[in-house]
Image (cartoon, rainbow, N blue to C red; front, side, top):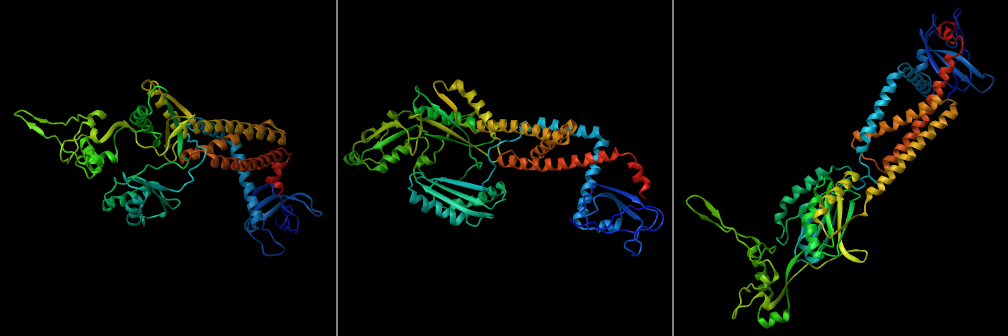
Length: 534
């Protein structure tokens, strides 16, 4: 703290002189006035006619106590930065305090309006455990039926990384994974990159995917997912329905309904058993019958409505044509006669020399599911698990409520199936945490108000402190809501630190207000400021 430059009460009459000291300053009030004569500083030339009168608290040495000091306006502005900032802050505090007391009804109305808006809007604020901590990323998946992991890497993953995706703007890192029948590529972008913009840049590159070897389906741009990922896990189990039938029900009835909930990015089915008609061959039987494996594959593929094997005729099914009459044109639709494994077993094998053979003669045709890579085991019993993932910045509480409502609507058509949505439910933790934090917040505000009242020995001060802290907290939450920022652990931590600063400022302001009111109550203080200390 800089030492005092000048202090001494100034009166009318002879030209006043100023005395210097090295006492420390503790300014409490600043008042402005205009003196009727010039001021001299240490015998120098007179300065200006505008002045500031400052009340100083002096400590140290023999100059203890308080004194009014009149300082020229320009000299006051040229004082050291520590003194000027201190004077300005105290002056602004007094200004706002006097303004608030003068328009107290307006201030109370504004505070009530802020609290009312908070009670209306805050229930709709997005609440999550953690913020979005991952950079913008885009995932591309490509299915290649029948290819090994090495073939997927050589024919799909590597060409896409080198020829298509390398050099995308704002790209920071490329990660890839090749497994049998599937290629997965993740593109991580620089921090701060806009996610829709990044997806647009990648989609523009995927237009050239036709230049890749035609051994797979077209690359698919996956939906963006939140950093926290899963928002719910639903367990499906039944002692009456086979897992294959339950998988069909989950794939065509439950999953589309859950995907229709706003904010849901993806629904994965763990343990899904796809219903298939399989032709299981025995190499020894094929050799004895003189039939090759390619013949069996071509016969089976061409016998179904559409085949995923691109080298078969059934991969591009034609139309049935039409019949032209005098009045109308009638379209012809093929009705597939094969609906059961026994129907498929009666199909004749193509390109057979000699006696005709059917698929049932050279292979075992049955209904089964695909070979499982993993499974969903619940309480030592196999079942299905629906994993629901959300979009970035989506509201976990709202998605959970909508998902449970959708499952409740589907229950009449899920007879015999036990649906359990409590396996993994982050909304339960968030709800419990919000309730605990709300109680802790109210208790903290009450304790802070109580301590302020005990410190200043006034219930009015306690009430003012409670109102200030409440309005400040609600106003901060409203600003976050207006900016589209959800509440999470990091935001709550920042609010706590901000409240610490607010409490410190509140104590300082209340102390200054108390000193101001005490000065107002001193007899003759007003006349002293008006003319006695001119």
